[in-house]
Length: 308
Image 1 (cartoon, rainbow, N blue to C red):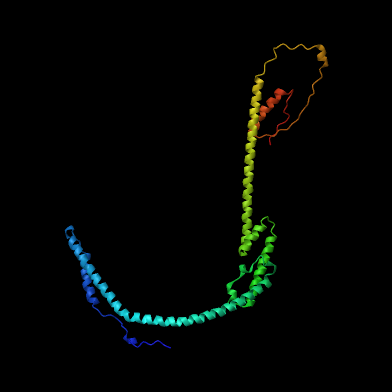
Image 2: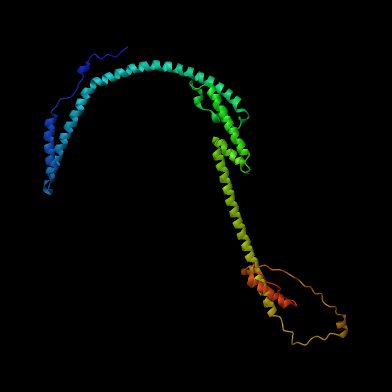
């Protein structure tokens, strides 16, 4: 079965179109050159428009002739192309019928092989079947005719051994983030990604701990300053009350009967030893406290001072 061209013969096809190209080129080049160097004055705009119209007419004439020649040449080709496509359509109908049967047969083989591959998976993956589902590791290339079941078994076994080893490494990690590491690992079975996840979580935890410690210190410092200020206010109020007490030194003392004096018992006294540690921001307040103690005790004595 062969397509044969009777007319025109191979040597009868149109090789070229002969026309006065060189003559027209010389004339048009000369005329265009004149217009390229021409400068129109304001009084010559009407002439310029006329020259432009004449040149456009020439372009239109050339383009129309080109389209006319193309149309004439394409007439036999278009007729041939239409009939050729009709033949191709007839052939493609037969190809489609055969292709459907071939694909159906191949799909049947792939289905049979898929069932065998799943059996190999169950055999090789063992107790990791929930952790490593078949769909997660399946490769479509395993169903190709060129891929042997032996090579599929070797590949699934290698996958099992790698994942089993990686999970053991993760389980031996002394980290509170083992669960998160496993989650990350099971996305793509990438041990490095799991380790990176652990590092990320640890870094985040450290930053959080530092932040919380800083906030705790800030709260404690605010509370300390509040208490110091409250103590200063309280002390200032007591000093003011002391200054407002009446002077009783010059007032006549009450006469106490001799019998009452004899019946008075001596007051109990205590000696208290304390150690105070303070920073320089607390010195002023500490001095105020010492002065208050001296004013309200029989004796206040500083035995020792030590720079820390």
